[in-house]
Length: 386
Ligand SMILES: *Cc1c(COP(=O)(O)O)cnc(C)c1O
Image (cartoon, rainbow, N blue to C red; front, side):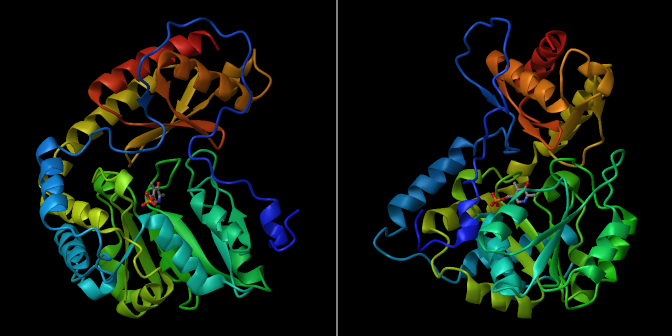
């Protein structure tokens, strides 16, 4: 249609963070209209910043932040604060030179793709189901995506398929392997076998380890970065640190790689207000992270309750969400798993709880105690109407 556009973009659909259910299911029971929706569909923190911290930010906005000036393009103060946080939480000797800051980790993913694969020079490897943004961003850049599968019982990566994809993929070869630790949407940590496989990948392959849920999992591979100049770890302020609205992510890697990321990104990629918010969040991280133990307790209780539903299959979680599927026996009155899941999603939504239908299952974020309670009650009702 537009003759100046790269043809491969014509096939792509713009990313919708909250896609509508696959099909509007028919014959749904009537529920009383709901005033507010519990948003358990995006893995955000259910907790806003405490008011005193918002006031602190408002004060900074009034007194310190000149809106007519460009933000700090080098993010010096923020990189230093992030390096201190990473050092403190991992024990690894990380310096500010090893940090690069992005407009969300999504920007860093795109920068990594630009730096490695653009112009027909490389393809990426992912293990589905996984975070969709690797594929989406690669596709918009014309970068081929090679996908391998996972075990249906444990969601462990098919390492045999991954290894043969690495050997066999040519023109262009695989330049980047993306893994999530723990994975989204399936919530499982990397296994020892997977980590062992990543350790032996040759230095001409970049290994991206996305630790978006680190604060919930408390598992990190930061301490191994020193031995692996081809590894980069991604983190975000969008989840445990409660700043999804501000779009702040960061990469941790050997300094030569962060130098490249700095070349690729937009010069003023992070607004001053976002830099200020990220600094405040780090200064007050003990307070912000103090809710995590109770969220992990809630996660155990939710998983235990879900495990009692004969229609559901659930898995352990190392993140702030749980993943569930319908057992085949639960599908008798439905033609397909996706149809049944769409109905379940809609039944929950009409009662006031949003969840994410994804990869043949539902991903449900751990919310406040009240939201979690309502989810469990509404799910029981929804399952009864399946
Ligand atoms: C939420 C999430 C991110 C965060 O992305 P931002 O752009 O920083 O908001 C990154 N990776 C994974 C796997 C996620 O689930």
